[in-house]
Length: 466
Image (cartoon, rainbow, N blue to C red; front, side, top):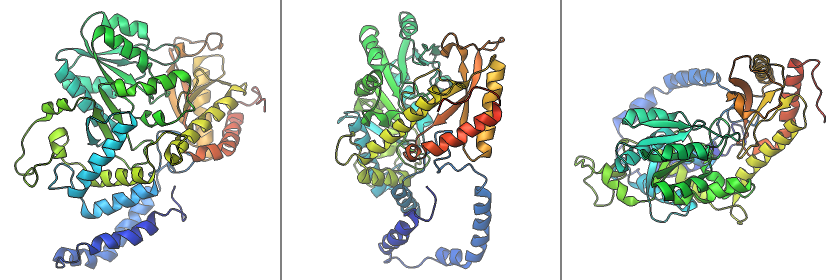
């Protein structure tokens, strides 16, 4: 969180000069003097940047509970800043000597979190590129065959499939927002499905596809399984999940490829994604030669196993430093501070969920599987419920509580809710991502603000039970 207690500035003040001293043997370059001479102009420019950057929601604060925005850990910020001073490029060992090794070690720790000792993987600019690489490899392994994902999967999968020239089909979800396995099997029987994308943590509602059961179908139909755990992957470390959710996460290590985004729950700056393959032999699809960059070492250059070329070495330094400080070990271990913080996010979501269930003004169609919660407003029609949701969203924002909105299919709501569709098949709902551990401590305050915002909108409506 931004503030005077953030140790970031003191860390930089202490350790960046030490890094600079490692290069004191070099003569002073004229470019450095020219930059120093323009310090007054730079101050004016940065003053303008500071003023304009205030035109943002307070993503770092617990009162921001809308989108998937989590502040980087201070050690990640500090390591990233030190990396930027050198500005290495992890495309090759020539361009990123130290940071390439940071990347290999950090990615290996992520793979180990899923039980993989043998793997091929690397960092990317984000989950979109990571999923692109995974589906590109899938297309190479199963040429001409379709990609399928649930209707609640991220839209990037259909777009990526189109970019790659691969067929794509969307599988309907059941009433829990999970991929419908009967409908999946209908598609598998056609014999032209090459890859099934299982989403562990959908971005809209946080649902977790039944990966363990999808893998059973793989044994029967012989397709590849790609796990898009860009959002939810780190939840494999915590224990306060529903049994079926635990079963899905326990099965991740049996997938063919995995995507996870350290810039979400991994406490990293944007952009930092990661793609992993269970079979290192898929590296053959990346094979190429770049003699003007791959000349200083016989070791593997990361550019030899990535589609992206230039990649920020600073991202690898930040991730390595964070995982060194906060190891990726399951909760219950003495050094499981990282996992415990995820458990707090989950606990905050469950507590908010319980309050909504006890409040007669709202409908909660789905049990939250991770730390994402969606709920609707009780009303006579879809149009009215959607309007109320928008108004509560605006009222909360005016009180500095920032939520999100999502359009949900009406079929996800339980029967007997009393909402008349009026011809509309979707209803606008409120959505909250309680992904900061501080949300648990702030929940009373968040609820007080939210309840007041709802009261201001639903005058004369049902009063809270508590």
